[in-house]
Image 1 (cartoon, helix red, strand yellow):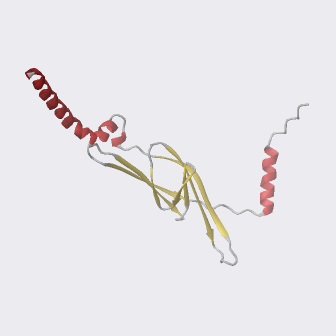
Image 2 (image 1 turned 180 degrees about the horizontal axis):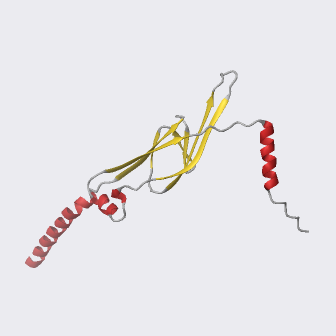
Length: 158
């Protein structure tokens, strides 16, 4: 009976010690990732990977490092409210997020365990070009040029 009591006491000490050693591992920090997008002209509508995020300047959280599809568009009325004259801006590009040192392979394991909060904040700046406005005759001419580049249609099978 006495051996059983000693065993239970030792087991309790071991469990308490294991709990105290494991406690710091559960209090690990985290990594907060975000990117701020700015553009010229400001107020452009932002799409990251075909998901609308808001208008520039805007800050967006992200979860993974790599290539992002970025689309920016804006419509500006340079006329009057009664006689609008719109100017369009559009940009479709790709941007890579840069991996900081605490997200390198191997180091990221220890960064996740440490009770420190890491922040990765990146800034992307874009110049959004104006879309040239073509007249109707120019549009028809371009359409005919593209049509001429198409391969001939395949004959229908009987």
